[in-house]
Image 1 (cartoon, rainbow, N blue to C red):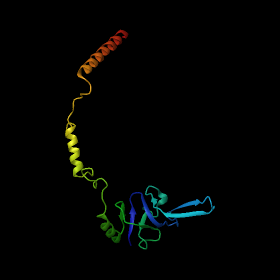
Image 2: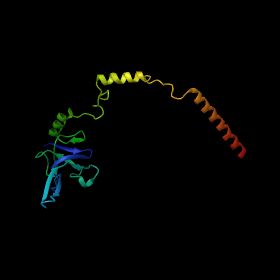
Image 3: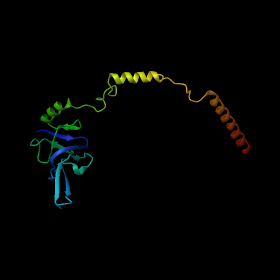
Image 4: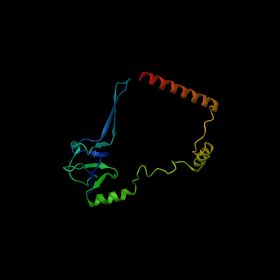
Length: 169
């Protein structure tokens, strides 16, 4: 036997649910010139939700297996087990152990340098040095005389607002 219990919701490619439902999507089109119906059937994954008791096929939750490797009510799926599947027997444990080396954490597997090659990294370092290397850079776009005039104007306006507020009290 090779049986697993789902610990989290999964989209799985299944052969058939215990009630006979298959994971298919049907696209139907009518040809405008001939009036004939064209029908295309596609296999699609099915959501097996561990939070929805209607999806349970066992008292403990959702049990899945490989074809011919489970019990009558188990849901047969195609593909490899995932980290969120708990093996229920020795054969499932062996299959899970073999698949475990293929599992990469989505964050831990990202490149440390953001995926940049050496040329791109050197370019970024040059740009950082050109823009001050992360140090604060003085704003030279506005002349200092204008900045001082604006500071004086703000101070004068602040005094006027305070004087008006004191008169009201």
